[in-house]
Length: 145
Length: 415
Image (tube, rainbow over all chains, first blue to last red; front, side, top):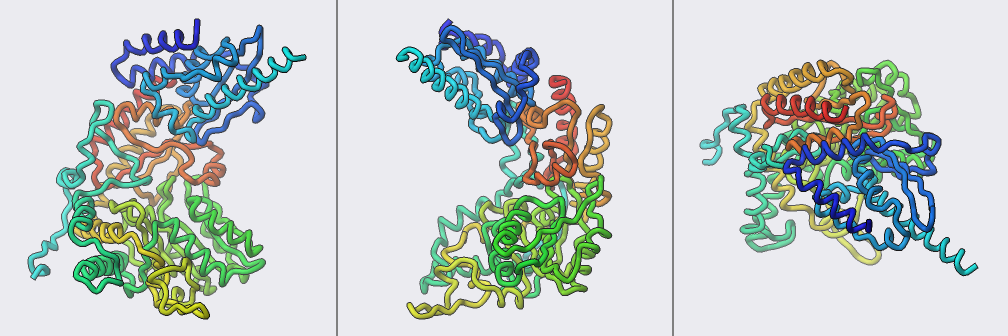
């Protein structure tokens, strides 16, 4: 599926919830389900520090696509990360770089991304795009060599 | 005439108080707003909001300059406000009241002027472990410039200053003591009078950060004996961007200016400039006139409140909420001093404070989460942050109950 198709799928899922508490309850469930982050990578090297919560992010390139794994000390941030990973993981670098991520607005989550300092989530999107850019450069170099 | 008509009877009725604060009628995510983040900033009574509108509609002109009617009106209102502040903290003279942007700027003013002039290499400055960053970092900058040393009074596990340790820190090199009256994170009300007395035995000046004290306690700077007292308008139901530095006249007169510009000078030539008298010497440029007037209105408002009954009301909120929180498994209250303002910081095993804050917000409950600008204090308790509820005069027991139930629901979801 393309990034936009996955985004639309998520927006559809969330349309069932009328109440903010329910929306977050779902995000918490997603956060709880997000496992498998390698424990030995929970170091400062992979840490995106926020004022109130931290995020750890690792990446791997396979078949020209980027896989993301992430963790956080906040369950809600973890749930939001799970959504981002669902949208961006397994996509090509160019598609990640150009992703508009409009679903964030559609879900009404913009307020939580605006407070970059408090949860590091905005920083995380930036970091994911940075990785995509780095991999793109790397792939181009390989092609020209 | 107005004096005769003025109703001097003090009162306290939380429901009629709530009617004075329009924002409290707001709903958030479909729930009635429960605003219990008052240590961050308080809401404003309609009288304060109206004073802004009235100022710009009817009186706006620059102060201390105009010969015209409006200039006289705004100057009078601005200076009347200074007089109100003077009376509010029982300062001896109104020229000892300097308007600033807030408590933070007041402290920076003192470190930059008194500090730079009087504190030198090897000298020591004492603060406490529970200080807000605003009462740490300006002193650190000064220490960096002057090669002076910042000494820190330790606190015990309840969040109380260890007075014996404080006494031991005082020595011949100590040149300044700067301590908070009430902790923004723990709620601890510090024994500032004793702290001041001990310092004064050695002729060491003391600054008290009263930002969290003025909305809860009757402050009397003469009774305390402090040399400087600072606070912000927005934490005492006044506007943002206005605050106060009280300083003893002799100290203020001897201090060099903080910023230079209009109104703070007496005469200027390219060869030499002489400075104005206090308080104008420290109020360079056009000040926050509307803010200062609004602060005066918030003082008028507080003057009508019976502080004994306010204290009783806030204590009820504090005791009820503390008791209910203590029943929650895995919850630990950070800050259990005997003498506390209505502030409760807490952590819950295995639950991130930010998550609690976000979930409570979905229920319309506004709390603060994080380090509360007191990172060294968090380090002292070995924690990364807390959730904090802080009550003000308009909070009700029903709201305390809504919060406790909301927190229980939140923890069920997060655990």
